[in-house]
Length: 206
Image (cartoon, rainbow, N blue to C red; front, side, top):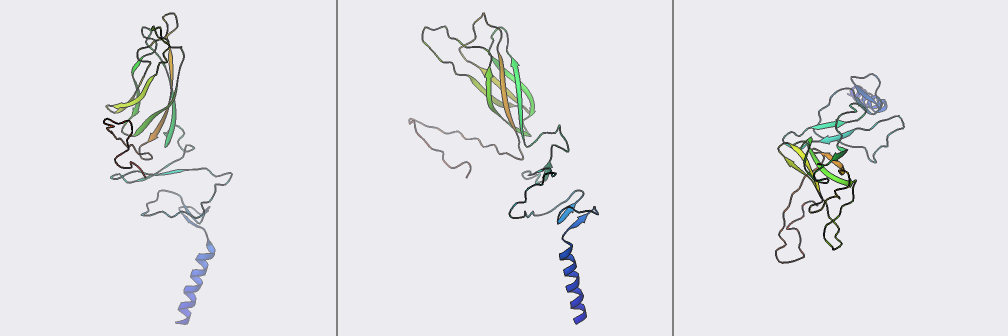
């Protein structure tokens, strides 16, 4: 009995001192290095979180919602042209010469089932004027909306337009495009009724 216990203690000590274990690799770089795919029912991170070394790269680990419920990894050094969890896309759109500032519908071809689109900033090349005697500051209507399976863009100074002597205007629209497995879309419609103040019925996120 003593001999068996000694052997078990010896084996435990050997595993502890080894410190690094490799699966499908003879040269593990960390305590556990897996060369290939891995399935796990849980994930434990080292505390405090270890900083990357100068020669190490990063990878986003993303868990998709149910029913797919999968963990995917993203690293732009592996597939440089693949979409990231958060993408920045810029469109420059020349307007109809007869209107000069109106983009009624521009199809981005971005899959609305897979991505969320937000217009983060915009610019327009021409000054906008009004034909009335009063000094009026035009307010642009700019938004992204989903119809069918893609995201569309609208941009317009409704009720205003550049002077007829000016060239056709060009919009610059900067988009933030989020992977839906990484971001959540929450929609809420609230009725202010006869008041100018109000509150959400319940916190949408907390």
